[in-house]
Amino acid sequence: MSRAGKKSLEECLERVVPSERVQRDVPMREHTSFRIGGPVDYLVTVKSRSELVAVLGCCRRVGVPYLILGRGTNLLVRDGGFRGVAVRLDGAFLDLEWEGRRVEAGAAVSLADLARECGRRGLSGLEFAVGIPGSVGGAVVMNAGAYDRSVSDVLESAEVLRPSGRGEGPTGGPAGGEVARISAAGLGFGYRRSCVQDEGWVVLSARFELVPGDPVAIRALEEEFTRRRRERQPLDLPSAGSVFKRPPGHYAGRLIEEAGLKGLRVGDAQVSEKHVGFIVNLGRATARDVLELIRRIQQAVFERSGVVLEPEIKIIGEDS
Image 1 (cartoon, rainbow, N blue to C red):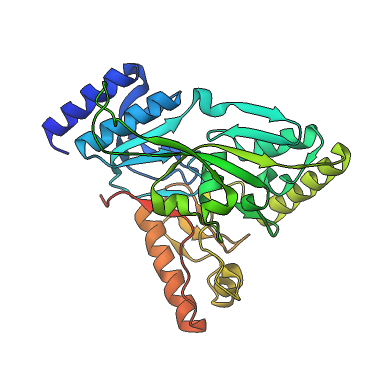
Image 2: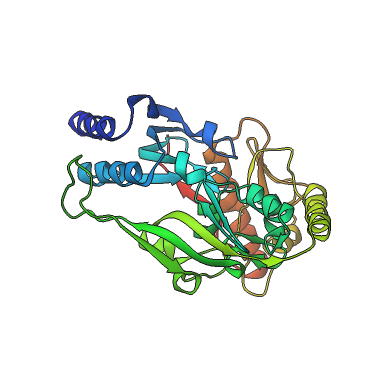
């Protein structure tokens, strides 16, 4: 970004959010579960929809890419960092609204915390999510799931922002930026994907429809899922969860193990010895280490089985 571009962006951002919520050159390793990543040019915290629309308007006006940063649990940022704006949702995006068996959750709400609160209220359907570390918004974008259940199974609808770059509002942001409620059927859900990614929409909130259940039975199921995760996943080391999507007719972990890759290491990035579907950071792993390890895994699995493994994690930024 040119010096003039930075100045224009900074002036716009500081008109629409308080200056203390505009941080510069923030290491992304501090905001990802991998504990990896170079600096982002700007990290901006927004606390309302109007602030979000205005900040995205600043980005579009200057021509700067932006990233909606959830809990950083499915993200690998390259070592050179991200030349743009990372937007962190706070404030109103943490709201919960309950109505009978439905709950409207802001995009920044922890999915696992929401699942536990549903259980305490005797509402069943989100038990599978009790160990998923991401946010509600990220879970909708990726159709997060576990134990043969997914967000799409219990989602009624989501409110999304469809940013518009046409014109400028009084603060230099977009004149538009349409908020729309999209039914679950209209979100194009598939395995670990939704049309939100393709369309560039921003999830604002999600409405879940649950079913009444026995809080004791729900708690027992949550504890069982938690036990399984602790036994089978390397929760004691930084990671981004499962690295690869499940190939049709196969399991990524089984293919990786059959290729003899358990424990394979590049620098401080390692194929987990506890769950080969995970790559873990042993302490000082770089994004370059992880990407090289991903390449080696893909090559070895393809040579042995003919299956192409596709990354599930989102990879952004530039090399150092």
